[in-house]
Length: 351
Image 1 (tube, rainbow, N blue to C red):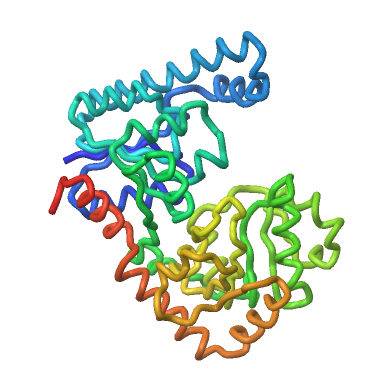
Image 2 (tube, rainbow, N blue to C red):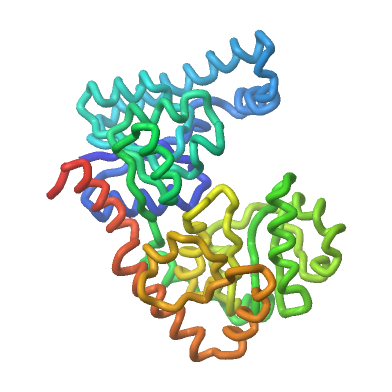
């Protein structure tokens, strides 16, 4: 059997889903829409994205999306997959999904963003009513979508691939360079989400912390000058190996909850556990589903964040036991293999 993944190629998620399908016996072909349109066309689309009222934008968008979908169809006809799995929307048109289904393929979407909160594509909600299954990392999104009649939506998480992350070992030199009790790796936002993230990490100012961030952080450092000594500007994209290496040299990783997730877990939680670093978790309701019957290293309000961090930094034995316990839960329930197996069971491809 073959699976066609319509996924952004730069996302670690792409590799996780490939692994999940392969471990369930599938040959996998992954396609990003940037494989179909050239860099010049992508730049035009990006530069004109805000010009919705211009005749040129409408004409261009029609050409751009049509070309992408024709590329998807060509790949589908060549590969003849039994499953097409889509991340968010990837500019997939409803009629393209109908074509896939007419040819006998099972179709599914994994939501990286809520289509009701993040209108990234005119047909991102329409698309969900065409596919066979929708998987959401947030139970609130599931509830919202079910309220409007989308019955084929359920909650799940991809977790991490324990086979891959076990083989990454920081060298002694790397441990000396990245030797921090607390670490954060990632970008910020230019809107209120950026201020919120900086406010969260301000709680750990003065502790042994490093923030490896992008240029968007610079906007907020003037409001939080105490973060400046902790900040390292990322000039290039950190790949999976580099990110994991830095994380493995730390003791704890405070994970601020993405405001776009109402009940859901930030995927960085699973990245932390893959790297055997303890995630300090800003509370979200779905934590109780994924990690039932276990005391979690929770941050229920920003004011107690540094107290939680200090406790686990100073207690090595307790911290390591907690990481091991959380990893065992994920490895037993939320690896790529189990995620894809559940999808196949819901699609009735397997029992």
